[in-house]
Amino acid sequence: MRILAVFAHPDDEIGCIGTLAKHAARGDEVMLVWTTLGELASQFGAASHEEVTRVRAEHGAWVAERIGARHHFFDMGDSRMTGGRDEALQLARLYARFRPDAVITWDDYSAHPDHRVTAKIVFDAVTLARIPKIVNEGLGDEERLDAHRAPVRIYQYHHPLSEFPSVTIDTSEFFEVGRDVARYYRDFYKWQWSDEQYLATREAAGRAASVKYGERFNLRAAHLPASAYLG
Image 1 (tube, rainbow, N blue to C red):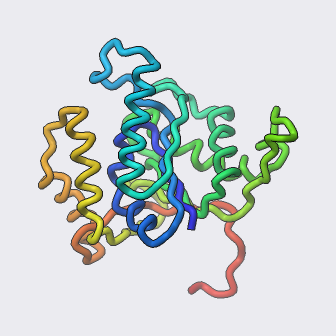
Image 2 (image 1 turned 90 degrees about the horizontal axis):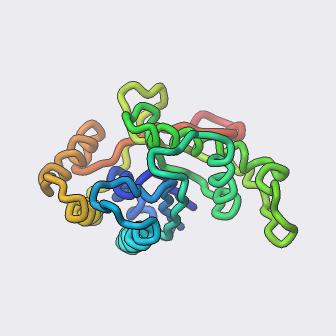
């Protein structure tokens, strides 16, 4: 499988690290994507955009290496995302290149507008990526992309208000990877967040599905083909 995880800011991915690491360990191709650099984090102070980009490149490389993934940053502007067509088109072109089977992203109810907007363009990009005239707008012949028309499943962070079915992934064997990534960001942001608190969130997610540690999502799907049977 090809698994794409798309989030707004570095650290947003903590809730699915075990899932991504598990897929990578199985041999699936995994890519971690951020729509912004998270440049408004207080830790950057008055640092230049170039310095923020350099630091975030280090963050992305470290996390991607820890889980066995590739990574990519867009620069759509921390707290400046609009959810417009141009942002969705940037993501659709990435779909056309990477050709994901599944995408993990934010839920639709998060308090941060960048989170909600990222979830929106993740879903919008599925349809845009299917249309050759759209993904190739303004591109030269040497840049031409093949549309990505395969079905794509969207796994959003679980939220109790979601209308979509809940899915739990057993990440018990990969809790150390998630803990390490949480520690990495904790040290950068100076969070008052312990290993015990992180593991408690994974235990709570797994409890309903009778596993030690889990990560929960709500499943959306777009353009799925007909099935012969329910199973």
